[in-house]
Image (tube, rainbow, N blue to C red; front, side, top):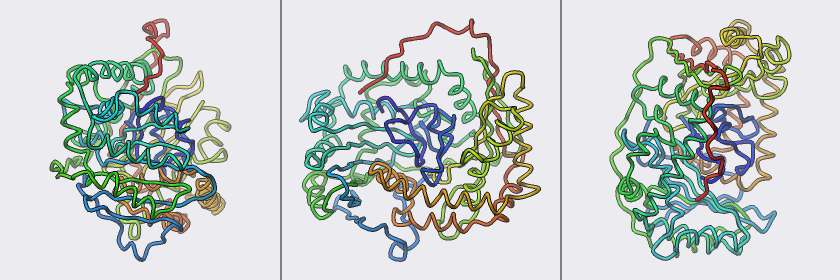
Length: 500
């Protein structure tokens, strides 16, 4: 992705173009307005999850609360097309999602999903390198792409008149990518430089990477989305070509269109463009389940920095069954009670009250194909230690365990949840992201409104219960930045922004 690299699977409050690599991962929340971004930088290469080949949809689509004006059709080749009509402006968002992300990679080729994302802009049998971006710009639109642990997605935001052309372009590169050794040799250098800039030269990103590598022994979320540098150095154009051939097929993809469109016309266009592509089978996805953690893990990263930094992650359940599960909703509310608004406990008690933290945050991602972590992080103010900050963060969680949460806190969270959905619908991109991200982790877009009702139904007793149940040392991983003198920092490398 240009400018804003990797995602974890989440819904974001900020517009896509404003997202920042360091701020991607901490907040994989159910609802965008609750997602005040916080440093959890590198897991976007950004979303934490059981593996599925062809995800089943929600329990009973017919019984679900279907968002008004949203329609779906499956093409004979297996591609699903989801259209949400929104006629407030003569524009449209067009997205293609592939259910293949960093978690589907193998050791030795980490980062190949993201590398292929770059290569998708390098031309096809019908369009030369750079022509895709040029056509989008000439149509008055914007385009980009992003890679997560669980999926890869491509999008264009264009005047509605340009939508047929966008669909033809995406269908073309789904089937006809021209991946040459020369183009690959140039682009892999861009990706390696991107890793240097966003991870190797970023102490906080290094801590995030270390946390994941320590928290997960067997599960593929242990690998960074951008890949280990050694794997990038050894990667070949054959690796990228194999990834494209394995995963980029209509049966492993779906199209989301939101905007001033007629769904019947979009379905006709989809049949004309995507419908011509033959589908093929997928590689076998074998489960890579994480063994039970039976003791606290700690890791320290030494790097030049002004202040130390701390991030803690507890293994917690993710959302599997929207109707039957209760704990993921309670964990979502807990994360918002701790850090969902300016009056939340961390900001009120640790930043403004005790003045022990320069920043402090919490985040939980219920939506994932793989494992889930509940994350708490922060930077101490000058004069305070990481140990003191860790004790203070733990004390706030202990208060919830012992005293619970107030009626007022619950009411605030629920009010924000409803407001989030209202504000989100002002953005076509946010609506498309919500639909796409739900589908990427095996949930059904028809259940979007049901999620709100589930959050509204969470009780104070349920929040206190999950705080008591899951926040124990046996499932905790702690990563700390041990700041070294800034004069030891290596000279800064180039600060160019990688572009496709």
